[in-house]
Image (cartoon, rainbow, N blue to C red; front, side):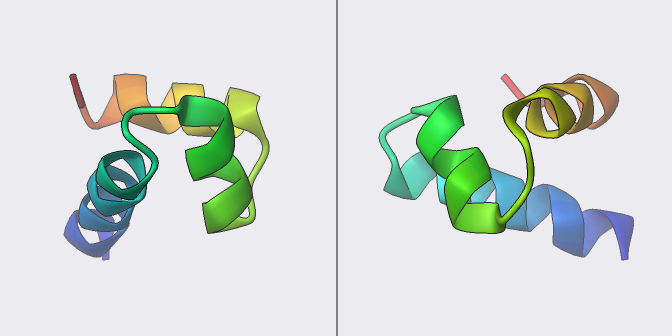
Length: 44
């Protein structure tokens, strides 16, 4: 499940050109939550 979440975040960031705010909106989560997950999964 963690890998699926990680891949969803990576895909959302790819589709938004790295725009974290837009990626969070796309995923239906807050930007703070997205930042925490990026840090947790060590996504660059």
